[in-house]
Length: 283
Image 1: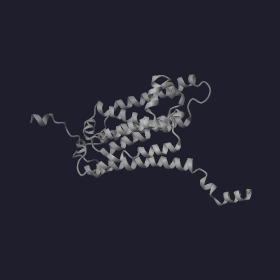
Image 2 (image 1 turned 45 degrees about the vertical axis):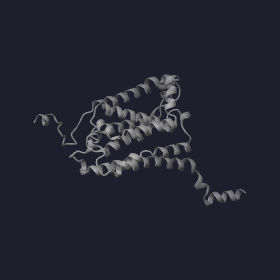
Image 3 (image 1 turned 90 degrees about the vertical axis):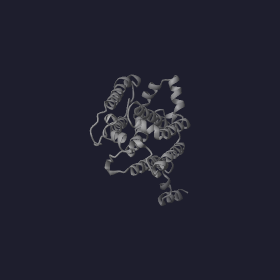
Image 4 (image 1 turned 180 degrees about the vertical axis):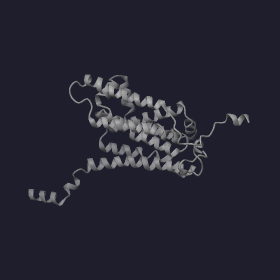
């Protein structure tokens, strides 16, 4: 009786509302800091010219919206307590979508103001070099799928939020050479395609592990409360699919877009009958 009285009570209602004040503090803090930078610092740093574009404002708004959805109720709570597939969806948003939006929304003058020209500048420059960023990011991805670590972090607390901070930070490093505010740090389009392709390969390891597992990989998610009727194995397979197909499709979509917009631009026009006829007439 004594043991049963101190055992944690199983929450049978996965859709119960749970308040996350820390998330709202973060969201409000980001908005206040952004508005202060644009309204107060911007006119001083950029006395003439455009402080920020409307596109960057829309990008920042979308980033904040996705950050709220992915870290607050109900996605965060379902991901933390019941379904690993939603945990994987949450991580996909936090690493593949939010970081590039944050970088694209940051004006170049603000980025340079934040990192300065001293040690911080050199540290950020080193950590965001393509090889360093890719290695760090993929190590973080593999490490955050270790069962013991997932089981402990999913229980909540500082470890859970700490891993999210590390994950997002490594993702910012990953995306900096692609769409960072400092344009001289960006790679060429060909290098970007190769970079994204290599990045899409490493997640296949934990994704395959999840997809073909015949038993529970993470004991924390082996709960009798099954959201949407998803069994444990179905949940793991869906998580593997999100990680492999969802993430890879997203990255390959960027690769294909770069290929057709940058390398194939004008190709079909040059191959058309009208173009050839004009070329023959000019000769």
